[in-house]
Amino acid sequence: MGSSSLTISPRKLRSDLYSYSYQEDSSTPLVINVLASLIERSMARTERIVKNGSRSLSKAISTNIFDCREIPDMTIQSYLERIFRYTRAGPSVYVVAYVYIDRFCQNNPGFRINARNVHRLLITTIMLASKYVEDMNYRNSYFGRVGGLTTNELNKLELEFLFLMGFKLHVNVSVFESYCCHLEREVGIGGGYHIERTLRCAEEIKARHREERGYYTHIARLMMTREGSQSLSNSRAEIDSMGISKKS
Image (cartoon, rainbow, N blue to C red; front, side, top):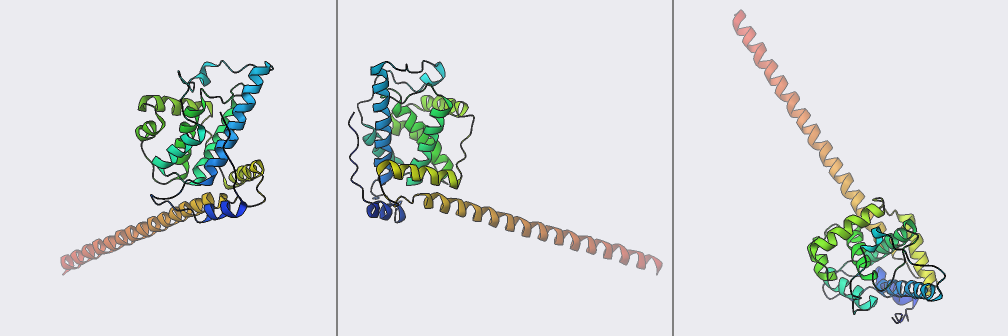
């Protein structure tokens, strides 16, 4: 499988990431090219390892769930472009998906990305990353159709992946930035890869929403307390008036 062509200048990449639009006619984020290239290089290393016979691939049943019966006739680049075309997931989703793939490989040392498991691994991690990063998402059934899987198949992949990851899906800003720097170094771009801003903005917006919800909840509690106090005062006044009438 040939590697993706990467003729990306820092200025072009910076412009694409800072001015990225989520409109229907948005062009494919450049990070997809970078991710496809990295994964293809990883697969090439796996092929060399198998060919040299220096290390055998994992035969663990737990990770074999990602193996396809037949190798899909679609390049990684085309597969990622298809996912973007139908889901419109932003650049940060693919970075977080890359974080998940790296963690998954670290948690399962015998696992190697190859042509038989890469497509299922990608659709699973991108779906989970989208759920983590985006506020609104498609159902698993839709991601399944986009990735060429049934809903039941994707549900099983998602559940198995979560258990194999120990449900550790949180990606803070510092980790996100470190992976952005890693992507930058991999493609040899000198300082222009600032996609961490996308995630930071998302976290700031979510934090602001949480603060607003907390503020409105506090106001509602104050109003309820005030109404309760007013109601109690009215009740006391009625009781006092009744006592006065009795005395008179």
